[in-house]
Length: 90
Image (tube, rainbow, N blue to C red; front, side, top):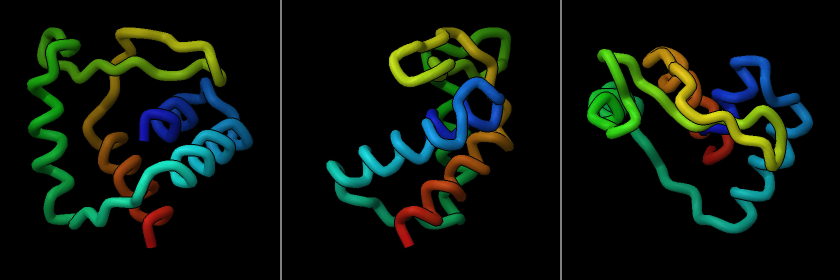
């Protein structure tokens, strides 16, 4: 989902997103998530130690192997990433 957010923030190409997603899903089992839990997940993420000044922060990818730390991420983008994950799971 961080790769998806990186792509949406225009730092990761669509090809890189697909490569990362395909690789991750080939290694790890998929977990079914209920859309009813999406907002709860966001609420839990708001308590992460990387957050500052009430804003969610994440490490995101500029490209495969190139990470940017302390990037602000809006809650609605996290929800969109959860939907992206759900499409891979189905």
